[in-house]
Picture 1 (cartoon, rainbow, N blue to C red):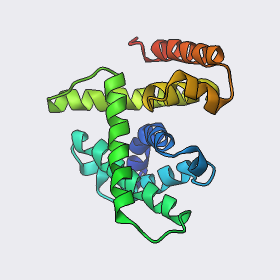
Picture 2 (cartoon, one colour):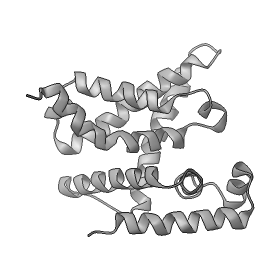
Picture 3 (spheres, rainbow, N blue to C red):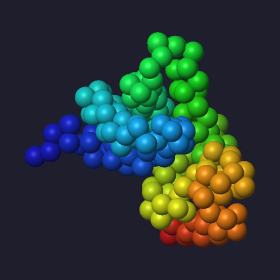
Length: 185
């Protein structure tokens, strides 16, 4: 018979891709090679399992997970910094995690004042993160950089070491595939 911990873990799995996406959006290329985003996601999932997360209201779950994830990401980044702890650096990162979540909301074109609409928006964000995770790496990276980080196409082509036309094609194919995946059935 499954226990409360197993039920919480099963509920949390739907948030895994979303948190990984937020982590990838926050890390600059230098840190991406050093920070294990999947490990930070796993630590966040473990914290949620050990908390009373399952008892939260639906509209409280995603903000709580983002806050815990942001704190865990800050801790992981701190390991690779040789400078003394600077609290000023921590606030902007947690703020940037929230901004990335806001960019996802804007990209989904969802303005949600009511709790039920916020719940639908959270589901849409989770669905987008899952859909992005299912894309080929190059398409996912191009879409994340251009649409979610706001990097100009020319800079994306330089970062990905591809021509501007090749990056535009990756973005086009990826967004076409995302629309198909996210289309209501």
